[in-house]
Each structure stands twice: as structure tokens, then as C-alpha cells.
Length: 177
Image 1 (tube, rainbow, N blue to C red):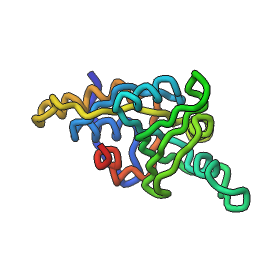
Image 2 (spheres, rainbow, N blue to C red):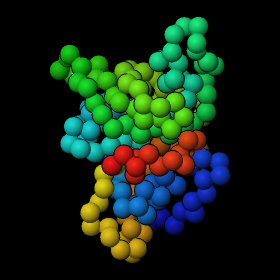
Image 3 (cartoon, rainbow, N blue to C red):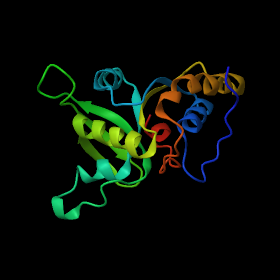
């Protein structure tokens, strides 16, 4: 069992801090990936789960902007909530669209390929990034059970790295679910 995580959001949230914080609210991290596994992500969303993604903010936002409006190629590590999927035309999930809720830039749809690129860039430039799928845990009703859930979540957040993602104070995953 890993040591308890001290959560300090002054400089954003690491994946471990996010997992511990979610557990303390009764939200279970069901899986964690250091890449965008579109099969797992789309399946989780179709089954009522949500996801949090740690991305490079510049890489993802630029995919939604016109050529003249784009910002710097690389940005900071940034947390997003993913709460919807629109299946693509192929049998696979690589052309799915995901509804992103961004605490800074609002809600928008993003292509699976663009989400993948922004996570790859986060890993390459910042050494952290990925996706964690989450769902409410109806059994975590007492402080002790929520603490145990927070600890269990840490086993599924490690893949995302140790970097601090910004825009995590709003906790939109708890507000959306």
C-alpha cells in the first residue's frame, strides 16, 4: 500500500493528487493510461463512466482553432473532463469524437486523433499525461471508505506521471456526474 498523498492544489494537481481527491469525494478511478487508448475510453464513456485527461494545453486547444487564431505549439499540463463520445463512421474508435469540458476554454468536441496527439505531446514535453476513467462509487459513504478508495485510486494514477496539471480546482468531474 502506498503512502497517503498530501493534496496541494497551489500549483495544479498531479495524477496522484487528483486520484486521492476524487476518492475522498467517493469517485473511483477505474483505469489509468499514459496514452489515449480510444477503445478503453470510448467503452467506458458508453457505459456511463467519465474520464479525466492530462494533456498539453496548447496542443489540444490549437486543434479547435482557425490557423490565424492558434497559440504557441506547446503549453502547460492541463486537466480536462471527458463526458461524452460520438462514435465515428468506422468500426474502430480512432475516428470517435469526444466531448471535452475544459475549465478554462469551455465545452467542445475533439477528434480522437487530436486527443491522442495532445497526450503524446504532454508526455514528450512534460513527462506526464494520459487518461483516467472514473465513476461514482456508491459504497464509499463513510470517511473511512472514502479514504480507502483514495488509496486504491493511487494504483491506477501512476501511469500518468508526476507532473502538475492546471485548471483542476473546479473539479468539473464531480459537478458533471
